[in-house]
Length: 474
Image (cartoon, rainbow, N blue to C red; front, side, top):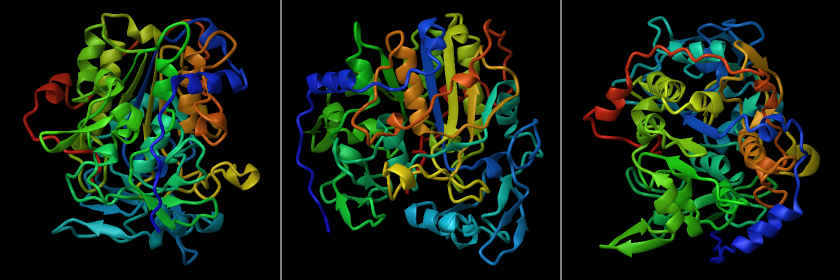
């Protein structure tokens, strides 16, 4: 059954009233009150779990929680084996695969996840039970960042599905089609390879919605209308807070603002739908490599979302193995910037969903207790590395976090002393239920930055000639 969503005129005054009417617990406001951070950079990669991405060295620092074996549906313990970052296969990772792997909390269904095999690929045994091979040091930048700064043992994707809804939660704290809906967009939209989505999608394109009972029995055109964190920043008092969404292309499922009607403002030009909104033109930055020059040219906004090119994304089956260098170069650009960004920037590096790989830690289930997100939150663990001049080397955090925690942190940092900016919307948004990251920022004096070694330098990403590809075109 398809459902239609009535176009809603977004009212800034309504958002301001929402901000004034709701207050988050004002815990750990030290960094906000002191002005410790003036910039927050949120970097996303694709489709990995901690056990998969870091399992080549499961005790790389004291306190990390990584498994060396995984339980399958037959009750067997399967040793995790090596696979290349550039593996020739991908794993299904929608909502149904989540349910199979989760198996009512037993976490024994990874072997029931389907496999997508590239032509000529020789599939290894137990393809879901793998860690990324680091024998050549290819992913060493990730280990270096984790050991030099902060690591989260319990970072979970908010949603139980793939990239499209994940990025709606990353930008807005929800994937609901309207502000007060109890439905969530649950899967990637129906579209062909290379076709745009969101408000730029062709008529007839839909995305499945999931209800609180966990059933995907309706669908909608993927152009939504509700507030976002970008709106909170735009209408902050006493002055707007600048933000940018660095991305590869306007129609990607990773370009979350393209699904928000009042930001995109879609219009047909020369026979093609394009986003024309003032907020889109001002804040959505293409190409994503502009983050490297903005950091060097003293042009970094207060809040940045940074998305990768497909080759740099870590997406199984399609990436080119350059993701660790891409991340290292963003951190280096900030850390070595002549603009002093290192002493006032918090950097969050995380992955948008689990990608179908095995992970041994069951997600926490707030929805089972109070109804928030019932039927769709939370998903599996994803890696999270927190980088700043105020983060102790080798810090390992064991609190439960999700994408809403990043939104909550931004709201706290840029809110007035003693009060955050948000939450974004009503009590159906992830930031309203998330904790923050204050334990990652306990040093009173900033640390000196040391460059992260990478196989490729910034010039590789700024000057390469290969055709760009979206991070995920499923």
